[in-house]
Every structure is written in structure tokens, then in C-alpha cells.
Image 1 (cartoon, helix red, strand yellow):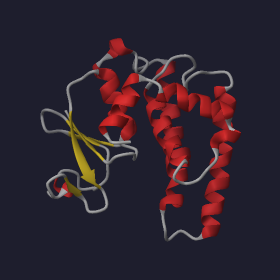
Image 2: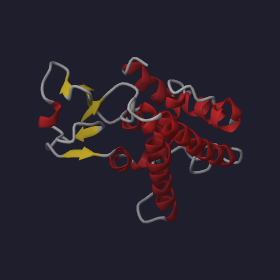
Image 3: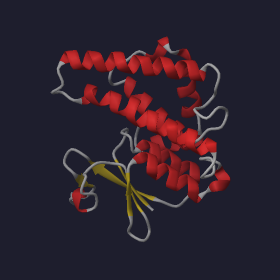
Image 4: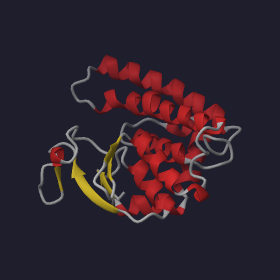
Length: 200
């Protein structure tokens, strides 16, 4: 398997899950602004969408979209319990969290990264994100991870997106349970390994 990634962006999530899985894989550093890969080749020749993550399987199949990629990886190593079994209620709860992180957190940060976005719109985005952080803080007051006491693939995604609070100068210290969660996930060997590989 080959993961196309850009350091520190959402592709860190499947990178962490690959490290957790122990599956053999290679990494292709990608410039998502220039749409090129290491060496200068056109990334759009691999992924016409031009964004990361993308996971190229050994047979050439290309998977895109982080929530789909992490489930694929988890299902390759069911013994690692990175995702509940397909068809179970817990699996649907996990998918609910993946969707929450994708639509409410990840996309919630997007306006803040856009230099063309008016300040008023950015202010509204920050206020909206604050309600999501409050929701997470209440959840982590009673749970170590998104699925209770079991680490799973949405945690890699949530950890990745919450890291963006630093460059966006959002103070998460007012959400102590979120801060504790970030430390808990960040202390995992696979997370440290993925971050080190990306130079973070």
C-alpha cells in the first residue's frame, strides 16, 4: 500500500492508522498546492481530485477520503480492534464519530485556513467550532476515547484535526478534557511514529 500525504494535514489520520496496523506501506510526500509529488510528478495523474489522503492498493486501486481509508485499513487487521466489526451497532457509532469529525470539525476549520475568507465569516466559524469543542469536552469527561474506553480510528482523525487549533491560535485549555484526550492519543507509539515520519 502507498499513502499519499502532506505533513500535518488530514492525511496524518490514515498515516497513524497504518502505523497502528503494522501493515507494510510506503509514503509519498505530496504538495497539495502545486499538485505534485516528490520528484515533481503530477499528482493529479494519480488522484484527479488533487488532495490527500489517497491510498493506492497493491492492485492499483485508489481509495480516497480519510474516513473510508481508515476503515479499510482497520478491517485488514481485525485482531487490532481499530474498528468494531461491520454490522454491529458499535460500528455505526464509530461511523457517526467519523462523520462528526469530518463535517463538524474538519470542515469547521476550513474557513480559517482560507486567506480570502472575510473576518466576520472566520469569527462565525470560530464560534461554531467552540460549540463542537464543548460537546467533545463533555464527552471526554466520561470517556477516554470517542468510543468509550476503546481507542479506534476516529480518534486518529479527531487528534489530527484538533492539532490545527495551534496554528489557528485557538486556546483549547478552556476544554481540559479535550486537552487530556489529545495528550492520551498523542502518547501512543503509532502517533509518535507517524508524526516523526512527517517531521512534525
